[in-house]
Image 1 (cartoon, rainbow, N blue to C red):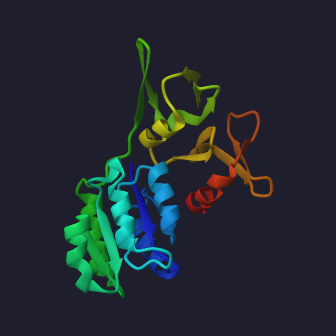
Image 2 (cartoon, rainbow, N blue to C red):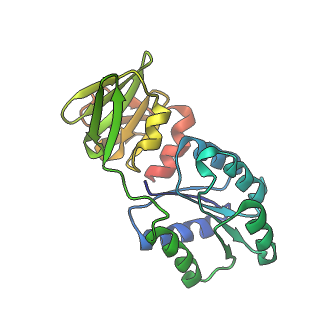
Length: 233
């Protein structure tokens, strides 16, 4: 699952970093936000492989945000790269947060690419998962992820709709599954995860997603709208 979260409140810098990442590996899924509170929400909802954090955000300290990220069990060892205009604070970052590296603003493209290429190309980012392995009583399912159209949660049960069948499970939650799925999947509603490769169209007026194989459109929940815009822009 190749996912990077960029937390930077200067759009030009954030988009520049995203472009550099895409030039190294276009398959990496990138989320951008300029707000610490939103970043923490994303970090809890999605399993990221790398964080790029601005040290001086408008609404929060990047150091404090990094500490909060480190307090999430999944991210005890996840690489954090700081974006800073004050390089003298780098030692504090390495000591307190155990950050992977830092980028000094205004940055040189060659320097940034060297840091990111090391992270991306030498095994820090995990390879895209092909199968979803799920257990249900005496059965173990191996479901090819690119065949999953959408996943629905209803009455404490999970229904996985694939191009071949519909599988019913009672031992998982959407949050658990989202952490195991690759970057093609996104939660658009508290009851739905969809594979973006099967999205036929999005009705922005009614906040609906039309999915291939689904009889009715799937509503985009209010709390997921910003995430959808960020992922599908």
